[in-house]
Length: 202
Image (tube, rainbow, N blue to C red; front, top):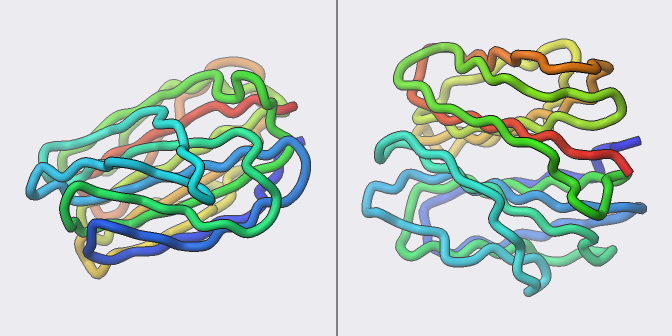
């Protein structure tokens, strides 16, 4: 059974961010989501855990207002180590990390759905949700809009960098057996990017 281990966040304006994260338990995976405002065409140069490179899975962007990247590391070492994020130039940034246990160590991510909204309140995404597996959703909002957490979801993080960009993470362990549509909602209507990935249980 997949379970949330720990989540951490850091926010600010800069080109280098470092913060500690502890990983414990069996069949571990570590995710890092970096959300920033690319007002000078900034790019992420590296994301590491304890100096070990993490793998970029994908990114989602909407104009120069919101940019998010999703990185992961299978079987991170147990204990406390630093998550490190390096950007090409200073940017308004929120960095978040989340580790989970009970995750398949081979090919743990089985699908991804993403979308963007330009001053809208919903981004419907078609998801393959399977009993025992996990849906892990995250988003970057231009401004301080908030997404409500549904009754079958668990808030993982919610971090605002001043009033410029908000990063949110939500996990769910649904008992669905077919494709569903998750209507990501945000209040008030905002410019934002949303992602959902399916994580396979061990």
